[in-house]
Length: 129
Image (cartoon, rainbow, N blue to C red):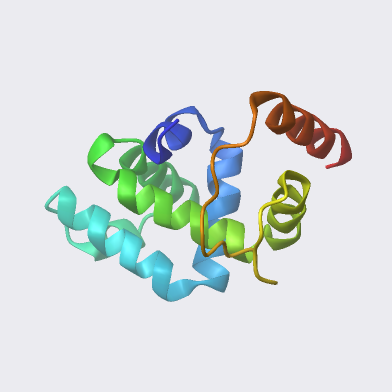
């Protein structure tokens, strides 16, 4: 599933959680996203910034759900995973035997894990978290 498809299928609550985290903890990333998405729609960023948070996040989620925003959606998800979800990400990588640094960054992507190993890891993490 591509990043923009993740945003298409994501609940509004999860999108709000991700975007709230980015706005508070990674402000430059959030501002860049707003600027880029506004530019794609030929809007000024201030138009988005002045919306109430619930409307702003819904608009951003909708914009990230479009195919042209796939790279931007991937960047946002990476920033959130490496920031807010670092322990979960590291646990996931450890479970699959993927070498990473303390931040969860992978230098060399390995071959795709087997479907069974991936399913077992996901089931275990879902049960735990």
